[in-house]
Amino acid sequence: MNIAAAYDIIVVGSGIAGLSAAVSAAELGSSVAVIERASEGEHGGNTRYTEAYLRMKSVDMVADDFEEHFAENSGGYIDPAFLTESIRPYEEWSPLTRTQSFFDPEMIGTFAESAGPTLRWLQEAGIKFDFLPTAFITTTTTRLLPVGGGLAMVEALTAKAKALGVAFHFETAAQSLQTNDAGSVIGLFARRQGQTVLFKGSAVILACGGFEGNAEMLAQYIGPRSINLRPVARGGYYNKGEGIRMALAIGAAPNGEFGSYHAEPIDPRVDVAKPAVFTFPYGILVNKEGRRFTDEAPGTVDAHYENVTRRIFEQRDGIAYLILDAKIDNVPNWRKSLRSTKPAITAETLPDLAAKIDVDKGVLAQTVAAYNTACVAGKFDPLKIDNLATQGLEPKKSNWARPIDVPSYRCYPIISANVFTFGGLKTDRDARVVNNDGEPIAGLYAAGETAGIYYRTYTGATSVLRGAVFGRRAAQHAAGR
Ligand SMILES: Cc1cc2nc3c(=O)[nH]c(=O)nc-3n(C[C@H](O)[C@H](O)[C@H](O)COP(=O)(O)OP(=O)(O)OC[C@H]3O[C@@H](n4cnc5c(N)ncnc54)[C@H](O)[C@@H]3O)c2cc1C
Image 1 (cartoon, protein in one colour):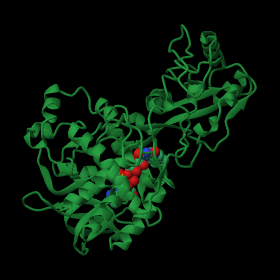
Image 2: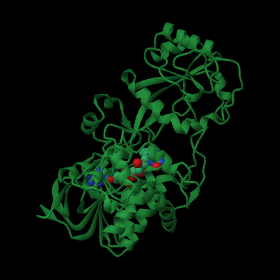
Image 3: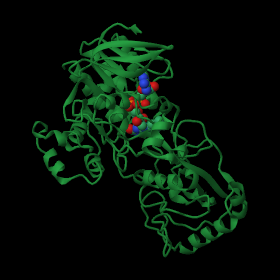
Image 4: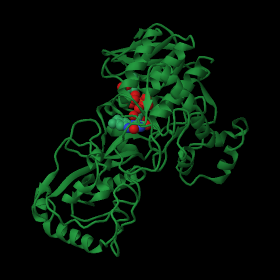
């Protein structure tokens, strides 16, 4: 075994969480090593590929619904006794409350109040923010974007980290933690070129993503149907869950919904990052049997795409087909909702379309006829909730329901992509990893996807933000501020 030089702080992963931690720690005078599985130029995990929407209404303020959405999706049916206790100061919480699997009010509040200052700090690294166009035609919340997306963030922070003297160890994969007799973390074992290397340090910050790149963990936690899931972009394949596993192995408490993940609708034929299809509110979705199975348009697409995609995932082979007719061209700018680079499957008749997608033509014809009959006259307004709903149809389509009757007919296949997994480690407001007895594990921190915070419906446009916020907070605590 090789022993690398000792550092004050060892950061695992170089996405937004790891780079925010590394730069912050180096700014505070710590010696820092970044351990990264990928090669230089391929590093940055999911962050490298994201457009990085940020749920903000300005650089300084989170969106109006930020805390409310988190609170509504902060766990399962949380025992009210834990909730009551969790609104008291953290110091007064019982060990049992500190280990509960939920995104507690203290964490939500810390996240919200740290978001603005963290974006201001990112600006100092040269990252610019603006309200750029998004893929959503209808929206309920505000989204700020970094100019150049996640790639610009990875490049700017990597350069800044290097300028501050951070040592990058690429093509090196973290495996397990080294602890002393008191249970404190004092180092990290990693694999590099077939050798085990020990990195010594007084703190380890785990920022190495979730387990979206690990088929075994996906099957274990999300279930056998996860064979139909794939990471939404190449970066996710590097995230194999070791950070979560190595911390659980030394007694860390879990947090986040282990059986779930952030779902996005993508065209499975395409190999570019995030070939999303957010166009389904203007057509119908049918499964392999040719039948509708969900309300395609319960509300604005930004708020509902995840739940619709979860229904697609539940269908046979985890796939559905979006059926549109030529009237889609009346929807202004509809192509911005489509990130697929493959052309639609088209046909002049529905039976021909059914043949091309291998769906029973009789069933598809019945499905479309029943849907068309249920469409009623009314004003179609594609840019806002128009309540143009079907009548007497099950399942109902609540908005933008127009008959599908003008050739050419068009179809996009859609599967659920796994943007990232929800299950991770329980952390406190300083991103310290909490053990199963409610105590922080000395020397161990987690940020970004490695720390679980999400349950039920993802609070959209907050994953990059949480990586930056809690990566930075971890470093500030580990470096003694
Ligand atoms: C196409 C796409 C679109 C998205 N859109 C948005 C959006 O608009 N807004 C939003 O908030 N979020 C979005 N997300 C999600 C968001 O980008 C990620 O959840 C977030 O960037 C994760 O940051 P992270 O630092 O936790 O992990 P990552 O950025 O994934 O970085 C983890 C790093 O750890 C490395 N690593 C993994 N295992 C090891 C190991 N054992 N040893 C060493 N290194 C390891 C990986 O190689 C990687 O570099 C999107 C994601 C994608 C892919």
